[in-house]
Image 1 (cartoon, rainbow, N blue to C red):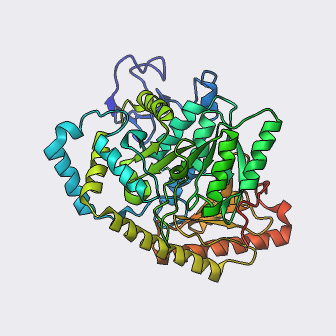
Image 2: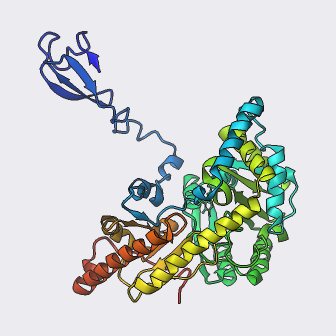
Length: 475
Ligand SMILES: Cc1ncc(COP(=O)(O)O)c(C=O)c1O
């Protein structure tokens, strides 16, 4: 708020002495003036700057391919308390011993602040890298701490790996469907994504072989295969043990690097963790890991393990991106791994997510109308659901949100417009009772949608019913 009286207003709305009430945009902010108060008020809610993009013709080509993820657009809506959100993939951090972690954080700063608040090597804290090797040993990987590059979540590792390998137009092979954040990184570097089908046992080796052969016939070679082998996001499936060796052999024969993205590998509900692809071919695989799902996503600590030459490039790329990442966050994770029973904590998480998976699957079985199909995931956070023919998950979303339930439409998980008939349901965050209530609401929305379809046919539905793929097909 400011008193007026300077020449600034003249020439805009009248003379200095006879300004009448007005509302205008000034430097992009909404400003209003009431003569009787003689003050100008600026709307504090207004963002700074004009909404008109003055630089629209000056962006680099790569900025044009950056698109907001379907999930980001949903976050604001889904966070409203009345909505049961099956949309996000946020871990249940409330199950952590928050008081213990709070004490650790304050001791870290009070006792070791001159290190913790300082820059650190781009490669990452050496002590943390040692602990990361210990974590990876649970999946059969025997990495050296020098092989590890600590990153700002595994999302940064995805960005860096794409940055060092992809020229505009290069091909990336990725499962159908694929993790939305990876697709965002690939799009930002103008990669072409070729989706490879999955089934109940994960990526189909013959389909991978076929995709590589089709590319070769067209004179092309993919730069890498991107895969989420365990408790896939969004499909919920896990790559079967007997397929792992075959996938590695196919990639090795084609000279194709594998990017193994594995944030959920330790969150299986039954049995031991699967052996990582990287364990059997350390030279052919870049492994991406994360503490987001087994500790806390807010610390933003992930990592990549790569063959030495690739690792060196990743470190250079990380330096140019962030110089180094948060030392404080790394030391907090190191301290947590050194002093806390982290394996026990992962067990607590597994049990909690298993209960929620059961609540979701039981209520889907009890409530969903005929024609909806899904699979029971053996771990992780997600159920991938197929809607009855003629229904479009994206077009239906506003009606679901009006009924106070949210999900992510399947189209977000494909680079080529498929997925309209699918949705991803996350069970990681809501309590079991809320999950049951959310499924009840969602079932009501789908039933109403089926009625509409039966009355008007799918041509009469709102939105377009896009192309759809089987992957991964459900019984
Ligand atoms: C498959 C997959 N990769 C990577 C990420 C990104 O994780 P981070 O929080 O470590 O950046 C996620 C997050 O949901 C994910 O599901």
